[in-house]
Image (tube, rainbow, N blue to C red; front, side, top):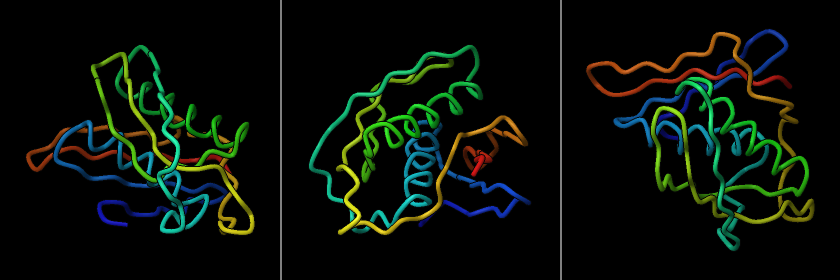
Length: 138
């Protein structure tokens, strides 16, 4: 997947995301998570879910955002294909996720992601845009 690098961390799994804007980091991180759980090329954007999260800092917001998506996958089997940030500031995100519910006949089983963690978490703005590193507990 473009702008996502998979990081193999001993006992865990991570992604490094690069994007020109912070909104794109959050969108791309969501798709990075979903691509670890299944091949999202086989996911169709049939259902739209609204997701809102509030946290103290942008870094904590990124982790909480991904953990909310993990929760939706764990409880309902929802897999996203598209993420659209509707609003984002340092403490709040509102987004629409389009995708479908996991079907073992249609979707491959990837990694079982337990949580996004704060281990080695980075969210930085540089000259060429934003970079994030997120480690997942598997």
